[in-house]
Image (spheres, rainbow, N blue to C red):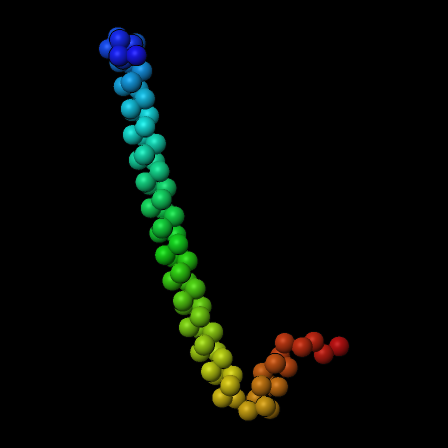
Length: 79
């Protein structure tokens, strides 16, 4: 085994294996960073949506029954 690694072919194979391993590690790091960034973006969107939902729920809860009915009447078809 040691003789094979010290031969010219063994050194070439070891060199290319190292290069491929480093390239895979760099690719994996970039991929993982991209996933983390997308996850953070998604969490920010979810937080903003929750904030908007709370604002709308608060607005609706402050409305009286007639105002809610009038607001929802816009969404019902009148055939």
